[in-house]
Length: 403
Image (cartoon, rainbow, N blue to C red; front, side, top):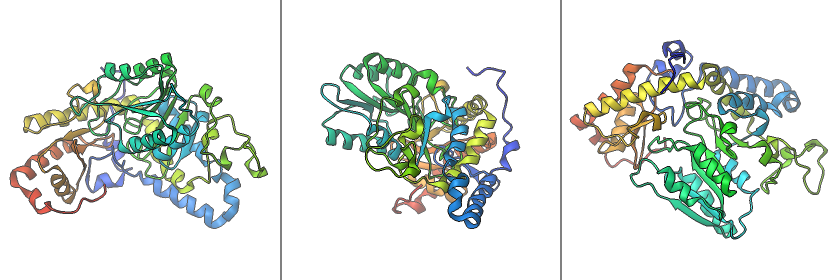
């Protein structure tokens, strides 16, 4: 249960800062958070610096720009900013980290669940083939969650790596990260925790939980847009690892342009590689800053209230949800498994109810700190109306669109 001492968020205090909420019912912050108005100013500042200062921009802030974003992220991840490095996406960040590991027999098992985001499975399946590792995939019995004990049983002294999601992208089921990490540490395995569906929505204490490494980014609940992603590595573990996938930004003195073996940095920058995505860093900063300012306890309290409202409304209208029934086990999303879900989603979008659809999940609805209670109720009622009127039929047979 959430404490009564946690501040209550007034969405109206934030909506003007997120222009799309003035024009649409924006209910998809688990996929792409709404852009803060101040992000445009930040991106203009990036362009102004480039235009006016040219190559001098690197020495005047661009080279260390990631440190600004890392400071904001550190507040909502519960980690030192110096333990973070910024990358372009989760696949790249995960590949950098994995390139520092060995998969020598007998410790050559990679254990994950079938509820992971597919990019994680694609990556580690490829790594397993390349290095002769074994993949053990723990399956969900119901398509909603994975029993913790079942996952713990698969993690043993032959396990090298456990790449798992904190919150499952299809169902919003929250996995018991701390218990999983404790088991992994007892047997000498390493956990890489994907927190993309929880960062910016659920309080995180990655260092306190003992997490070895974590990946995520500002794209979703952090309202920072695409183009940047963080990799956290426990500071003690960091010193033991030497990623093969590296580059000049990981060097202690990159502008010496030394040849030969790299002299690696000893902080999170040890996991950097090539030239950073500077505009992506400028784009991300404002959303992450705002989330840190509001505080994750308050965001979580607001989210739990509204996801419960969506859940209850769906039950009243005879709509099935693929999210956990227990609010404590549920992240920031409710998926409605409606018939013709993709087509229903397209009709919702046409009506400016902004949601998305995922196979084996349904129409995903994710309120945030700028969402009104009445928008939560209205979105579910729209689904019922679209089904009853068969308005979805006009979208049947259409090619699937990104989003």
